Each structure stands twice: as structure tokens, then as C-alpha cells.
Length: 297
Image 1 (cartoon, rainbow, N blue to C red):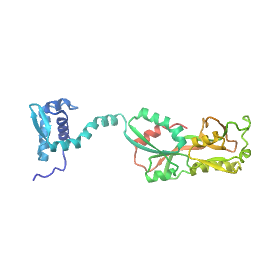
Image 2 (image 1 turned 60 degrees about the vertical axis):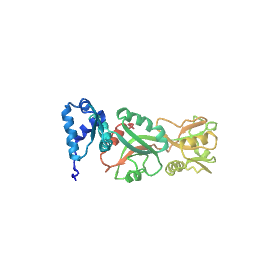
Image 3 (image 1 turned 135 degrees about the vertical axis):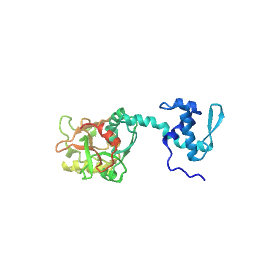
Image 4 (image 1 turned 30 degrees about the vertical axis):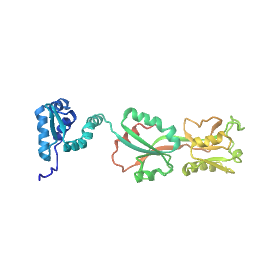
């Protein structure tokens, strides 16, 4: 019994691939990505058959070769590699990298910040796929677990093992039903709103930011409603069911039919939104490309 070779020459596999793909030695020589003669292609295949101790082709016409069952099995294995190799070479030479980058963020940022960001990325690197995940989980924990490659969020504290880059800022706005009687040319009187239901996020971290702002103004609403997203909260308010404080991207403001929005009166503060990743993560050109396309805050 012939021994199984531990290594097969890439050139012999390449010759085999082109003969199998084109159906003949002459056609394979013409299809090669570099100059080669028909006898040289034949020698590549013959040496491969000798190494494997199997017949890979049978002649079915004067200039036509067909795969044997063993040849078909080998062709099914090597075909994806050789068919994708030219595009991979072009990508590497052009600084292009394919693959999937896993990104987590909040619903607001997924709708308002990230779409334009991904557009910029794809303009330069169209082969990169982005898997976006809406999550309210702790961003550093997701990064440490390897669940995501990049987290885009507000961090209360930045752990020593997490690197960050500021990409945006959130500014708090008071949102009220359109028919609410508070004068538009005066700061919102939060104390006067305390008797109305407060519409809060159901997600704990976003809800904590809202109640932190309420605490800074010594306001304690008599009752609360909960919504899972900014759109849900705005829908409740448009229906006249209460009021809320929504963090929104600086330079923009919450907008919805039958809703008015006002900047939160002082004391207030912007919240930094950062792109965060593990400092010890392996070199990742997809992550580098995503950060290069990030908004400049």
C-alpha cells in the first residue's frame, strides 16, 4: 500500500484545479493566471497522481478529460480555495480586508449614529460585514467575554483593560406633549411636571441616566411608565401620557409628531459616547478600519 504524502505541492494542486475546471490540458494552460505550457500542466497532474497513488482524470475525448470519483472529491475540496484566491490577493494588495466585525450599541445610537458610520466604512472597505447587536448589557463585560469586537456606548468608568475613543456626545432634552402649556421662551419648570407621569426607559442603564438627571433637579415624579426605546417613549408622550428626559445626540434633538422638546435646564452635562475595545485584543484590521471611519467628535 502506498504511503499517504504529508504535503502536496501547491503548484500540482493548481494544475489539477485548472484541468478539472476547463476539462483539458490545453485549455488549462490557456486559463492559467500566468504563462505555462501544456506539457508542464500535464506533468503537474501526473506527479500529483503519483503522490496520491490514484487516477484523477480519465480521457473521454481527444481533448476532453473528466474527473474520476477520487478526482471529483479532491476538486470539491480545492475549488473554493483557488476560486477565491485572486480576490483575496487583490484585497490584500489594496489594503482591503474581508470578514465580520461584531458591534454592540444602544437602540438610539444604532438608529442615529451608526448608519452613516457604516456607510463611510463601506465606501472604503466594501467587503467588511458589520454584525450590529442592540444590547443593554455592560459593554466592558461583553468585550472581555469576546462576545463583541467593539462596543459603542457611554461608559460611567473606563476600566484599565479597555481602550476608548470619543465618537459623539449625548445631550439631555425634556420632551413634552405638544399641547403642554409651558411657555416656549422660558426654561422648562421641572417641578411643575412632577405631578405628571414620567416615561422612563425600561432598560436599567438608560433609566439610571434619566433618574440621575431628575435627582440633579430634585424632581420625584408621582408615577412612571416604561418604554423599551426612544420611539416608544415619544409615542407615549405624543398620546399625552406623560413627559420624559431623553439623552439625544448633540446637534440634534428629539422630533416626533405631537411632541415638543427643550434642552434640559442647568444643571446638566453632556455624556460622552465612546467606541470601546479590549487593549489586549489580537491585531484586527477590521477594527482598525471601523475606527478610521468613526465620526470625529
